[in-house]
Length: 384
Image: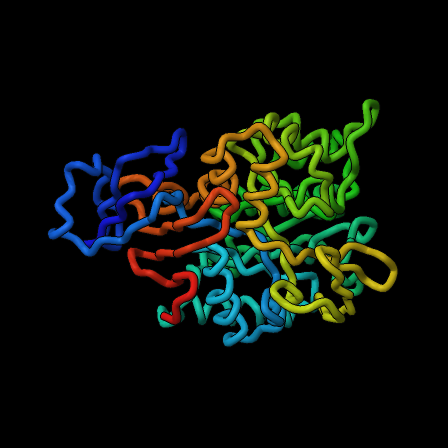
């Protein structure tokens, strides 16, 4: 049995001091530090830093030169090992709008890695299928030639591995797809890459949309007479929303407002591509050329193409640009996405009987240690 001492414990609604966490694969108890006999446990000293739940990235395409849509199992392992250094303990490998054959090959690669139980990095929750059921008018960096009519049977066929998927509710066949998937599966239906108006967006929500793919980006904007998808997303209590908090996709001046409106429905994501963790230069996304310079990734025509954001950086950016308490900012990258994915009974917060997925970090979200299922998988400055 292990025990973390001398840490500030980040709970869903407060930060506890002078307490300790006792755990094996699961969290066994959180008790006053004075009750602990160090001789009884393998002690981990947090050295006054925060002990927080492991982060959950529900939307990430690539990292360290690898891309989920490559359909390469080794690439999935490289990504899983890389993001655990950023405090991510659970993730949804995310596909692009590539050919149907490539999408299924990517599903297979994620499925194989997830089920083998032999990889070392962050836990795979399932695939996030971003496309191909989108609107060409809001395709963003997605390849138009591979966009397909929404097909519920395709999602249902792969419901063992698909955790969520994106659809534009206004395109032909979308309403039927949304309704069938939401009724017949536990797959989270997300609205995105959409040219829907306010009424069309609300119709999609009524039929079963429960999530919004990267709020503000690749959707109709908010206007006082035409509220669009953004307006529908902010006005609805039924949908959670993703935010790419890199200060480029969305101005940081809006972070606090979004958090105030959406509360526990706000989910930080990275939307990271293979250029993440790599030097500036030329890369690809969904087979299309992308140039990375600083925090910006752009296609040749200037279209934004994903990000190079790490999830711990997203938490820091939100915390510094809002009135949120530290524990609230952490929840936006842990408990909130876990709830959206229906995984919060096992992960997302430091509570007894949940998986012992934890990070030790400072207030700047520099990760000192990542613990997954009670095992140290990353320790800053050490080779494990």
